[in-house]
Image 1 (cartoon, rainbow, N blue to C red):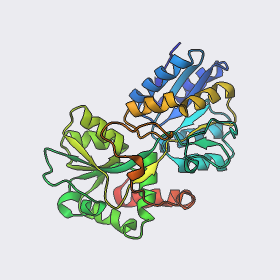
Image 2 (tube, rainbow, N blue to C red):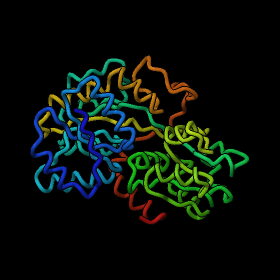
Image 3 (tube, rainbow, N blue to C red):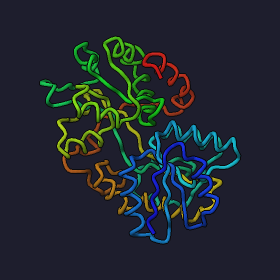
Amino acid sequence: MNTLRLLPLLAGSLVAGAAAAQDAQTITVYTSQPQDQMAGVVEAFNRDHPEITVEIFRSGTTELMAKLAAEFAAGQSPADVMLIADAVAMTQLKNEDRLLAYEDAPVAGIPEAVIDPDMTFFGTKLITTGIIYNTNMVEQAPASWADLARPEVAGSLIMPSPLYSGAAVIHVGTMTQQPEFGWEYYETLADGGAVAGQGNGTVVEAVARGEKAYGIIIEYMALNAKAKGSPVDFVFPEEGVSVITQPVAIMKDSDAVEAAKVFVDWQLSQTAQEQSVAQGYFPILEGVAPPEGYPDPASLKILPADLATMLSEDRANKEAFAEIYGG
């Protein structure tokens, strides 16, 4: 019954065709979570719910939003569920009246701060952005964001682009809201030689292979690579970290709402939270322990961020980033 399908971005028309034939027990999930992890998510979900077939379309959040916009313009989308990194993008979908209000969602034990007040989307994880470095190339690990601006560091630094990654949208938006950083910080990094890749995957690969000594990245990718033997380590910068919550939501025009609700319910369950921990994520459900070696989530210093302002400035932020780093 597990019919996970990992489809390339250019196969959108094939997805739409498949969706036309799907019944109420098949849902299509648009997600930015890595493909191998989503295979594990679907396998675990189907152990509890073998009656529901989950089809996956995976890409970066920014590209997923562009795909959705094209589908909306054409009149329909096969997407039933969104599971993306970026609460700003999810808020945009909510403001466009694309999300279903799920007022009875099982949110007990989930922090109120990660639940949309109108019950249209719900955080499923706590994902922070910090610094990865190659332990074969770096003798003195950086301790702060300010350390990355040193010329000897910036010259071997790679970061994900908000033109591709939802996590990078949040991180860049958060950093530019901090008085001590702003766009001057990104200009300084670029002047020192820092470059932008696509998503966080390009960052961990570049640092693990020794192409770059330092990277800006979400923590679980770096710590998972370290656990698998890559010569990398991760730093939670002393000024604080930006945070995303990988929200999940049901599309308002879904033709499989009940099955989509089962998927959302499972995402918020202890079983799913423990499965996320096994994949290296901080849990978001009260009482679930973080992965081994991770700090207590309560000990993290979180940089403040105004998501409403971030949404209103989203296009301008991406244009500013592209002007500095290309895109």
